[in-house]
Image (cartoon, rainbow, N blue to C red; front, top):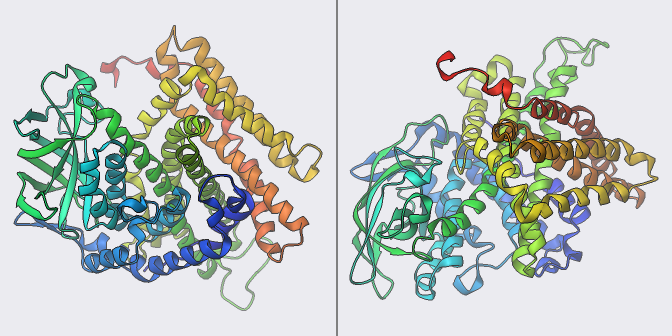
Length: 591
């Protein structure tokens, strides 16, 4: 069986030394002192290791089962969900007016990572609910907020998002689900949605579906789509539950991973729903939920990799195989542990340097969201909008790679279900697909985000990189970081210039290089994070920190990333500059 321990020291390093949270001007951050955050994160870690992690293999093995229209979740899930609710974990950053604790999104992010690492499939039930809560909080009427938000914050009711249909995935303009207006102001929703995570289950007394559908008069494409609140059980005027709505689960999908979460086919047969937000403006309301979900999925990418990495390290230290080429390291034993071998170290360093860099990027992104929301900072909002497809796409691609590398450390035992490593790889795989497949994230980055607002957000990012490098001029210790980051940043700028010069006249040239640009940008982002972390670690050493070993390890890990991973930017640039011709050379019939 696999195990998991929350990386509390690394999280506190980011809170205190890197982001300097208590000293920030963001409202609410002054309350996040070391004592408070340690108490919260330690308790979350205890819940994760003692309650959630032991259920991870159970959920994978048992899966969910549809019985007479009701989905039965794996053994132990209901008790664990009740414990999460009673502990207040579902409402950390929710509005106090509706029963939330009002903590910054950064705190929700750190706790969310811990729970995802312990049990990704389980955490999806409350994670999707949080997205539904956010959409209604942003776009709902006062009456809708009063009815739904307290129950969603507490997870007495859970939430879903319903976009995909059998004939359309990313292309929502092909949607067929219909919404017929009724005299009482409600709508009757008719259609079928697929791939609906947590669409039906036995963990809550009601499920609030947010459903995209077409109302009359909306026109073609996504411009005619509206978003509706469709409860599984109708809610009476006094807030009590009434009749069952005409929505049902027709099937549970058989999936590669996340078996503990029910992925449902949902049938709407004239189900009663209510408009959320403006008529025919459903995409705007849904993207409140989608953007939050994309950041959450980016977190899933590295959080699952963290759990896989921890188990790979344990195995590499315990498993005896062969002798070190430099001489026996375990002379009293029959062989040396795997961790003495350079190729095992390479795989572990790849994982460690990615996970820690991705955690820093995600926490920084969460702080930008707090700044945007709590200070109405348009620059922070624009920057996190630019980074959202990168956090989602790059971190889930690399997170899956890391999970596979962790499995590889185990050799043949990694392929055996008994060890549990295959679950990490199978669970991580979905994050590259849902909430917008990573190819779509790349197209969004190149096709929309680069040029958004005249390109000022990407230019602001380059200025941040430039300022970070300049801040360490004259510090020889930082040159391995700043020199590598400068080179990578210039390669990213060269790629952007190629798109500007060729994108309009040859659109395929930009699109063919979009995934490479997403990864190039991801590497630059992690390079920036490692530069910040190295500077913070050196500052702590200069101040005489008692945790010298941690800081030295952090610096060595960062140097590895800059030396071994950041040079990949040159490859991505070369691919981008090769244009569309190599990609589009074959006619369809040649495949």
